[in-house]
Image 1 (cartoon, rainbow, N blue to C red):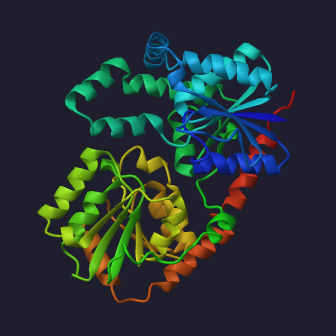
Image 2: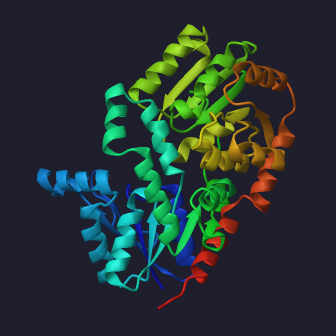
Image 3: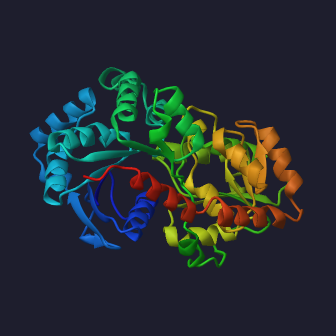
Length: 400
């Protein structure tokens, strides 16, 4: 069977897509990928996956404008449709594996136009809720523009269409599966969980030597990833002011200029700027080194419709590296950490509760949390099991 993946992003940076492509190739499937072009020279194949790239700069301004209007008002991408249809026909694709909601309608139309192609919709997140969160941090003009040009209600209709029409739907966590069944009237038999778990072979081969230069002394609380309002980093900064002076906060990643500015200003106003380290983006190869330098790694999400139905890779990366975790009691985060006994759970957006919990951990032996997390990844939350679940989804598809 030939699988054609559609990714509205660059490759091979996307961890989930790379793991899924490798899992399918190991099962004997031929895997092809159509994605966006990045900067500079990029390989035509990665790990045996043949890649075609769409260079947006190669299209005229009028064509891009027409494409933008079609996408805004109809969730249909004309440029992607033409390229994906040719891609599927040339490679004689049996299954289009479409990554994330924005391209699903386009993928469904490609499959319909060819007549004998099936569609797997891989919904990495609750996209309507993610867009609502993204817009919440934009300017008033941008929020009004989004409400007029592409209201959340229209995105939700596209989500329901994806759930109803895809031959199979893959999502990242059980809470998301329940959302698609209960809120979108999805068929339980066609909706499957393939989670954002960690590839132990890959992470175990990475350098874990703690990074000394960027990491302060004392009890280090870290966060790895993108910054944004729903991430809950404000809670950590406010909590820091109520913890012993030996506690420091290590923020590995970045966000928009406005997001970074707000966090730095908050650290100043809370009087803890000298205890907060902003590293900026670091190479993924160095991420385990920062986690290894941490006493406690965090996922402090706010409670939203988005965070209630997703789980980030970072949680399982922390656990794989035997680092105790602190998460907020949001959706799958609290469930998984309680179930695995890999760390502590605090209420979302409550700095005092987070501060009290962190303060109580200082000076304690937390190794059991780390060991429990590692064991959970080895036994349940490792990519080996989710790769098998993905292969089961494909085994259930009818081949032509």
